[in-house]
Image (cartoon, rainbow, N blue to C red; front, side):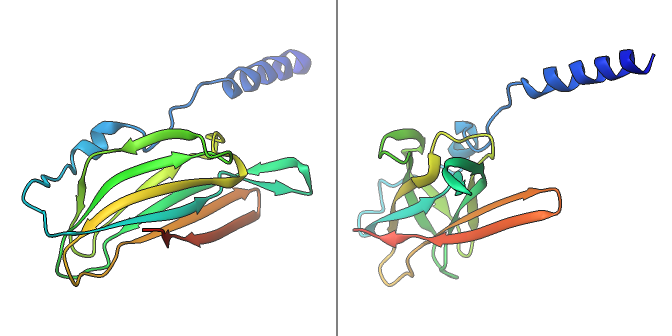
Length: 169
């Protein structure tokens, strides 16, 4: 009787592991809600930033990797002006475009933050993935802040670290 129950439990566990999971932050509807009209914003300053993200890191050797949940945090550091993020493109370790989160202007109100989440099961980026963000801000406005926060917990062990974007234009 115990062997039968154990066999049934094992089958349930095996089939539940093969369940296809939906990845978060990819739904364009979430970004369309933040769409900004840029037709009257000609006097804005343009910038472009690079952010490193790690959806996987090496563990013990180059042949074993550990998956991470990664968050790209997009922050407006101005307490008076809205800013505009024009594009958010995600690339893999080899520089191949994985996905465009959005390629139309969105706004961030003063002191507002929004995030892009790379789920732990989404390892398409590999060990050297990155984002390119293009943005526009009013004159004399502080630049946006882009941070990467990577984390994982297994049992009682936890791992977390951060990265910061670099302005490239």
